[in-house]
Length: 300
Image 1 (cartoon, rainbow, N blue to C red):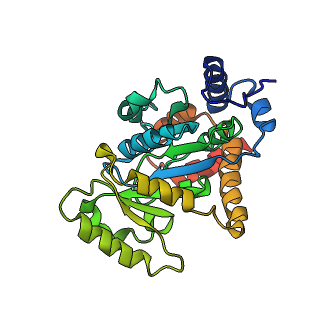
Image 2: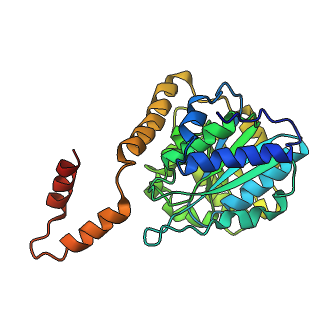
Image 3: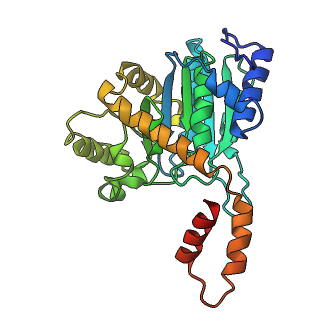
């Protein structure tokens, strides 16, 4: 059995190697992964911070600024930077790390890039497992930056203790249209790139919108590439009380649903499925729904 380190600050090189090896085993479902997961010590006080929002909002730059501020407090920080997987070649650019290059030599920071593996909601079951591995290692903060796919990206709420939705002033005309998506999951709103025209108006409109809710949600302005507003954001994070206990069964159910989905489908070879569909779709009377039903019945 592989024993994960209860890390000290600063993290030792051998600790980095153990953490990286464990994450690789779990992410790729290799031999030893089940053993690691079954023996995790999850009695951790680590704060899991979810960073989400539309593409181009500056999420990676904001994470970089947060790391800088938390590093000054000598905190242990882990980052999972999630990038989208191509549906065609199954590859991923993993480009978020480019904006965090200055962090890689910091002894108290661990950064891991990971692909969505086709999950439309921005998270895969493997990311849930990887976060739990990091929780068992003793980090103070675990930051999960999701891909930013838009309104459907709500799965982060089932994973994070605090969900931060990052937006930009140009999103002003879209507030009403996104009320039922990202707007419903935020614990903190951040209007990034607040030096752009219309930032004050957008932030004020956003405040009016969130004040209609039962609980008041902070709306903060930042200029992440200049580290402006980051101290106020950190204060809001620290002052935020963890999600109410009444939500815990819902959040655990969301995680369990993703994990059960993964287990039930792990024997399905997607490449073979694609090949079968390619062959069947050439038939004159091809019907995808009949194909799926036949596929399920033959798999039982």
